[in-house]
Length: 463
Image (cartoon, rainbow, N blue to C red; front, side, top):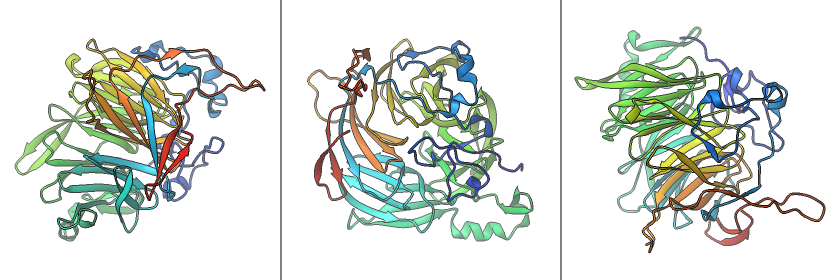
């Protein structure tokens, strides 16, 4: 295997990969966006268009000579605050000052949050309900399958947790991927070792670098894990057995999404989105390369598939979201331009697509029946990059029958914010900018919302 190259969008001091690269740091920004990027994609272009512009091809994105300058791209431009935000509202914040939030998972009335403190916190009704801690490795990804909670970590391990049947607030670790039994059995056969770096071999069933993403197959029988070690692995959930390891990219795999028609999508720091076709062979699986959807100089940082399994979205370090339509045989269908800096996370809910970014904002897009996207709002309130998103349906009865969603956003500002978004919200409209007496532009942010501490106390804080 080739050696890993490049650094994250912003390097992590705790990772071995961050030691060889100078950190690119905007003023007062956290260091690590927790996604690997190749050397050519450590910054985002400064000419990203207005959030209301969408569905155009990459070739249509006009770039000025200044924007192409490598010097101008290092300066993070101020976000355009001259927009009127739709009725999508900030409901409050969950605050526990113990580290940057890297991962979220919502399951019914419970919300799981993972941070670089190695803790996983469980929230219920905006109050801290429970928590459990791994021995090592910050929590990069969380996914829930039935009663099992899978967490992917910086140390390359996947841990499995389950709530006690006697006390739902008590969570116990019930396994690791790979299992100790499989690890020992596999280690006895020299043919199970592969070269991972020069003069270093490792077992193929174990990730030797950080877990970047987790995804479940459509039948929820398989777990997929992607890693900065350039591979993705396939695990059988019933017995935690590793069925397959695929060397997928030339650089770190930042995202994986198991989709429709037995297809799996991977996005990498090498700037590509690849499609893999799954076949079952006996008791195992075999994944074959199908096609490359995207090939660019900017790192692919996030992937998502809509709830109808008809559209694939990919976010990248240039601040753009590309998408492909299943009904058009996965042909490129357009670009959503709403961010000034890297897209760090994507999630879908009904007809909505939400993208979180290093520019601290969350764009909310609605896809219509014709496949066109409209920006409904930009959710602002975080003071750090938005690293992860989770969503659940808002079950409060709506007289109009509109569908609303509760969205959770985790940030490197160490907080999780709660938003209510509606599929019926009107598109964004420009409004007249307000200024203070000294001529400073006043930000058009959402109104004040309560902030919920770990103990559930409510205090008024600005969003």
